Image 1: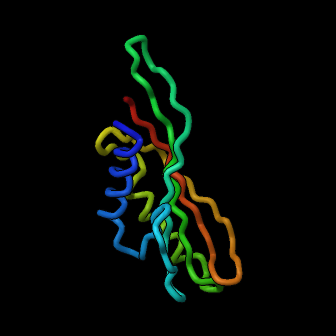
Image 2 (image 1 turned 120 degrees about the horizontal axis):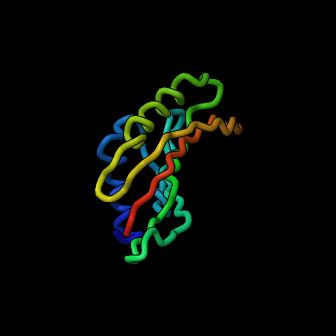
Length: 126
């Protein structure tokens, strides 16, 4: 699987199962909604290593979903969205992408948004 196809299958899975908020995609124009939650999906490619003498390569990466909820609205909504993201990716295999366990990280708030990130390590062989 190519890096291009990897991105396509990850984005397609998220788009298929995410019905909660608007999604900001990498390098695509996006205007955040006014006073309602939204998310940003980013695919962070990691290292690639040979796995066997036959030339099989393992490609590592992280699926990062940033969740933005309005400031001063508590954390319940963001954590519910985090649980939904976890259900979409955690311990799932789709195409050649194999996902590991999801983690949540509270980034905090700025003047408009409270941010929580969900990160899911993944790998694929090629």
